[in-house]
Amino acid sequence: MHNILILSIMSGLMFWGSHVTAVPFKPEALLMDEAELTDYSLSDISAEKSRALVAFAEFMMLKDPAQRLDKLIVAIDNDPYVPFLIGCYIKELEMDKQKKLSVKYQAELIQLARRHPAALVLNMTAAYLLEADKQYAEVIELAECCINNISIAEIGDKNMPFLLNLVNLCANACVKLKDYRTGDHLFNRLEQYDALKNNLHFIGYALLFYTDALQYADTAKGFWWFSRSEQQCAKDKLAALYTHAEELCYQGEAEPGELILILDLCRRKQNSKKGLDMLYSILLNAPADRKTRIFLAVYYHNTGKNAQSIRIWRQIILKEPYQVKFYLELAKAAEQSGKFDIAAAAYRNYLNTHSRDYRIIYQLAVIYLKSGKFEEAEKLGASIPDSPPGLFVAARAAQLRKDYLKAHEYMMKSLEIAEKRKITAFINDDFYRALAYICLKNGMVKEAVKYTRQLIKDNPEDPQNMNFLGYLWAEHDMNLKEAHELLSKALKLQPDNAAITDSMAWVLYRQQRYEEAEKYIDKALELSPPIPEAVIAMHAGDIYAKTGKMEKALKYWKMSLEIYCPEDELDRAEVRRKIKQDCN
Picture 1 (cartoon, rainbow, N blue to C red):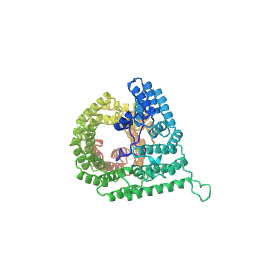
Picture 2: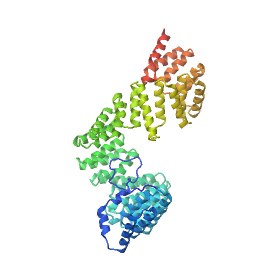
Picture 3: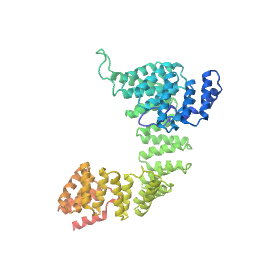
Picture 4: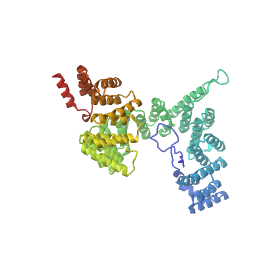
């Protein structure tokens, strides 16, 4: 059973995703208006309402899902304008585990909507059901019928979100069916009403529709040679809508929360300046407005301007130091801009009042890991109770401190908890690669091979996993024939991969096939950036030394020492010994 989403325009003011759609809202909201329910329950002005109350009372006493839904159908049919009854119906459908029943009663609700075209909430809910089943033509038909049967001019603030959601569902269906004209007629008609013309939520949905319409609108001219094409009409409409939205902001007619859709469209179209101008104009009308400053900080963050976002969050926090949620926003902006000290301080401030928020403790551990504070990262990661991700961070920190035994202990405990709690998504390729690497550092070669084989078992066609095991064998001078076969297969899948090509060169080096190894290391260097990985440069030096090209060998040995590389991945002392030996 698909979840039914009901729009709450004012929820989620600060955060939005890359895809703009109706704001999710659970049907419980339709069950919470106690005043309305009391008025409704006491109402005896019509026989229909009385019959609805009787059916609802019977519904409350039944245990069988089908019978309960039957009674609710009767109740809604007798009084289709009460959102409370529709909310009950949706909750019943969500709890119904028998899919056949769910399908049947979804159809029943849609039929109810068709019988009562002026019941706005009922028709909006039915439209969601139809959209979930990809019945887009039916969504358009239902929405248009409902809009034709209600009085737009008399829609109050309470019902406006439901109307806007219905309009958005209809527009989305037009986009899915590539029906530009129907959507265009819908918005042209509705913008004649003052209640919608100056409504920024409505403008946002219209902008979204015309933005998508540009992809499929007809580019040919109209009937007369001088008339505009559908695509040009869509472009002109977009320009006019953006201009109108800007005017509303300049005139002080807008709240920042009303700009959510428009700001996100600006971000998606890489025109963040337009969004900033609208926010600035609202701020100029009310310089001390808290909401606008918050929106500005979030918008800067979402458009990659983290330095500006940090600055504004700090100003907000100075005025409201006890609003701890702001510290999290500051931390996110700081982390993305690489300012780990600021991020860590913000997380610590948040934890002063939420000391058991393990999600944030984990984030702080990651920040410490990124900033090289390995002891702090290990301590925090290990402090989170029964947390595989926390233990993984602790293991990585211990590994970077070169305490491989402790790192192995953390990894095994993390694996044990993840398997016990069936957190299968966590035990992925990265986890097994890290575990195999730590096993190698502890001299546990058999265990490393075991976990690497598990990688290939889980993803047999992944060339990275083949490369990991092939290189492992080559590095430890074992199973060289099988390593050669495995890397040959990996190179067929990714022939231009520098790391796999280098691994093949190293296997051939171990097999004392130096001339062949040289061909592969030449190609690996060719595929690498001008400055290759330190390990590839070291391999090049060893291979060229074996083919008698000592000048090239010295060049790449020295290069490997100059390239950044974690200390546990390159034996620098051994490379220096080779250089010294050759110089002598």
